[in-house]
Image (cartoon, rainbow, N blue to C red; front, side, top):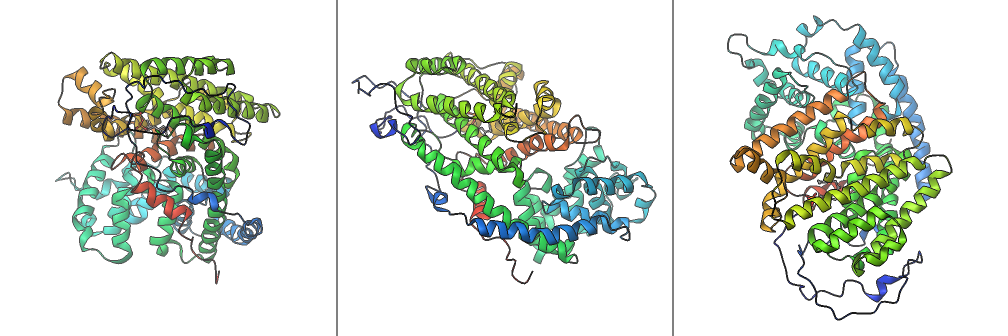
Length: 584
Ligand SMILES: CC(C)=CCC/C(C)=C/CC/C(C)=C/COP(=O)(O)OP(=O)(O)O
């Protein structure tokens, strides 16, 4: 949340214009609108920057023949890469490098069993003595490839790079830029107690920053890229495109990998542009831009966020559902933070908890259309998923939505009463308002058979990895937005709660919260190691939610002001043509 508090009504258009009362889905207001000459209350308007994209993505027109042609073109290289992965004549070092590249290019979901079988076989036979003979780059790649896939290769493999006398890293490390870069990537996979990796991260970061301006070509691009964001905390789809552009030497010897990556990028871009068109059209048809014009109008940004959770083609329906529900969250969050009065917030929260259309009468005019659409969308989902016995996931999403409304109300009550919560109190509510419980549960709705009742039951236990992802979301957002929130008179942030609780300076509070975020990342890394509590397919969206917070909030409030990172990412994925497949 950002921008300066603005208490004037600002000469805005009436919130609910007659046009906004009808929609193609028959969402007509039950009563004719009579304009009451009531006095407009003081509202905490934020004047959010408008959408950068306007209707740009609505005009896309999918050519199904083209999509099908790409789908067919995938088959050949897909099988050729499969043959490489299971090739018994390839030595373990080459095999691990291949699997590393396949993973970084976003292709490992095509071969889950083959890759696991290969890694399992190699991991069983690993002799730590082997690592005494090999260079830093090779060790780092192997360390990452094992940890990416849940195998806990010991961080002791890096021990030999530390000088026992000085306790620092050896000169050989400093001279090996590629090795350092790869060690830096590896260190982000650290677990609790892996002090060597904590030190390696600080050391390599400082070294790479010192030398980056002296480098040229791909190496310079790679180092700049990793310093901005290492693979492990990035958005998988974007990381795949960047890796393809700057690490060609890693995989160019395998022609089928190059070809597969190219066709795959082209296929996915078409599919995703169509999905983005669908949600953009829906948003326009639902007339949110006119009924709730005070919110952050961020359809491509929210679609990107959800694409960050899962990009696999078979989650297309899941992405559409999760995007719509997350857009509902934006409406709710901005209504509570940047428009409604406290009485209106109480009544909206009550209506969301009653969840029945008759509750619409208690709502202020401006939010009635939203309420109707919210109930309709969930009704449609319930009908759609009841057919195959999956309505339980829709109910879980709805309950989480009701819970977050109560969480937002709690924040609003604190603010209304001028109360700064204790830190534990803040965090209890803050994990709810992180929105990640709603989003992760909503993400399950369209995922199909793997998101069964057992999977949901695991989510309901509020596992450590989910808590960690929520904590990262809540605190990374707070650290980047608390100054703006304060300016707007919003003091419900973790930074203020921490300062009050522990009577420390702002700097100390921020450092402590950053440490909590680091520890939460270690929890996530541990939760992704074998044996995992649930399947990797269910864990990955939770890991990816944490990654998306890093993407959006690492440098600034990238959601309120999406003109930097998110604009670049949206441009790269949905505007810039993917690598050409001519001559493939
Ligand atoms: C909290 C957070 C980063 C959530 C991310 C998940 C997500 C996409 C939620 C939808 C609503 C949203 C964009 C909240 C962040 O804005 P904000 O900074 O105004 O959130 P706040 O009002 O909860 O601080």
